[in-house]
Length: 60
Image 1 (cartoon, one colour):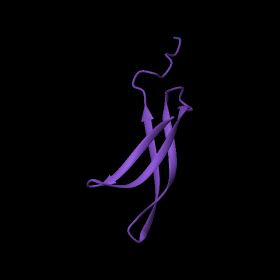
Image 2: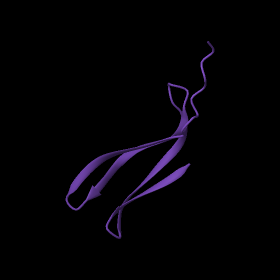
Image 3: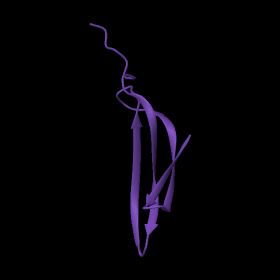
């Protein structure tokens, strides 16, 4: 699991956890989603990290 820190300048405004995931395409990586508040406004946040080259090769 990764923790993703969201900052506004030097101030941390959110912390999002991203769990390991195998995507529908077969690629491997991390994915997380959540809600954070910045000032008076709330935001829905998603983060996706995909390992380059992790998609399985198709047999031809």
